[in-house]
Length: 295
Image (cartoon, rainbow, N blue to C red):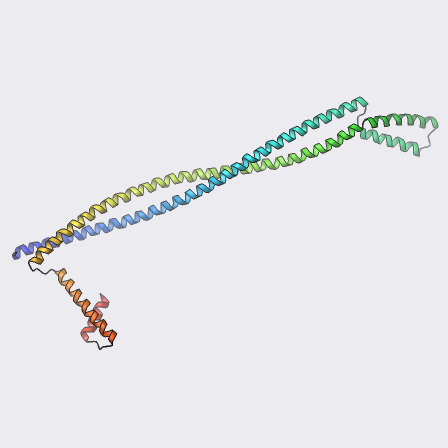
């Protein structure tokens, strides 16, 4: 058995160990709160990364889709330009053929020649011409009619030219629309490409921050682990001192408090039983109820 001095020394040691344990628990709780705060910040960053990755993917898909539109439309544009060039070559050839025929016939414009023929015919029918004058005009008219008949090929060329000019005009309108589609799609594609690059840069920056938080969390976890070991060791020391004190029949305050709580719990159960059975409560029962309600 220990003497009083040794017992007091152990009680003093117990109090000192408890104070150290309290301090360690306070540090542990502070670190645990700090760890949770860091986890919250890291989760926000992770969520932001996920959102930006989704946004970058959407911009990439839109860019690729628009790039496909530009590529396909450019092919259509080239086809239209080739068609226009072919028709313009045909128009040039038709104009040259027309010019050769007119030069060979000595006629500048078949339509004008037709008007002249009608004018002379009208003149013969409406004016009182002498026989000689009418004969002279008929001779000129016959020559002009032969020229006009020979120039009918030019009339066919004119009709073909009209169709070709219409086709070129329509193709130019289609080409203008195609160019606008290419320009707009290329502009939109570039916009989505820039946004995707910006998102990628932001993702890299956020991932760097995320890694920093992960490193901080790892460091705190290591500190918490070390504190846990210290807490376990401190509790073991306290248990060892408590064991020695119990072996020497020393009743500690915590033991008394524990016993009082157990007694109070037992009495409270008895009071609760009385309430269920409708029994009359004593003054002591009412005090116990009051204490348990406060506690």
